[in-house]
Length: 252
Image (tube, rainbow, N blue to C red):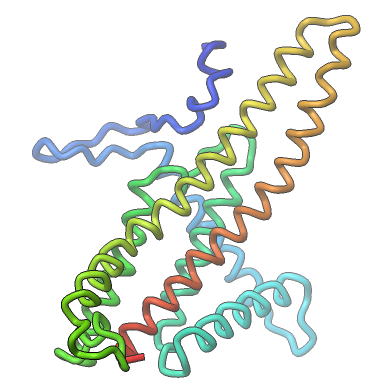
């Protein structure tokens, strides 16, 4: 048990809380599921509490909620245009869910949902599916103009089209790997330095002074991880807006 506690990868292990299977399909409720529910509950409770007593002069919670609303609405409007505002609820949900998962993962002994590629890829797959479906429904075959940028000579089509198709198909991979890799790497390094503090401190005597350096590094990394948690939610959301803009305006 102690060995597992010091293993920096042990924090990413998925454990079953309630075993549940249907026809051989494992639908068990896990620690990952629990923290996803916690993320949704946290955002829902915050937004309901912040807006339940709406006032002309907002309090702190209402101010944060309104700031978040304006932040996301400006992001959508700037990157997907006015028409892209129809996707505001979706982008707002994506941003708050990813941010909540990232921030809850900073709580000691919690679980970082976004440190698993299956979760981030599922989110990215939903985004790309929406882009494809909406792009085809709105633009028809004109949507495929996305793979041949305007102004490109026709004779370059055999070169440009495969490149653009590969670029488009790689979007869910890059979108999911970016978030997963940053959260996984950050929490792993943080756990390593925290392990150094415990290991050196357990020696006792003057050797305990050596724990000051990894302790300082761990403290700095905690601050950095909070910043990364926000930035990764922001990057994930802004790329979502850019991809949605391609579905709305494929010829641009």
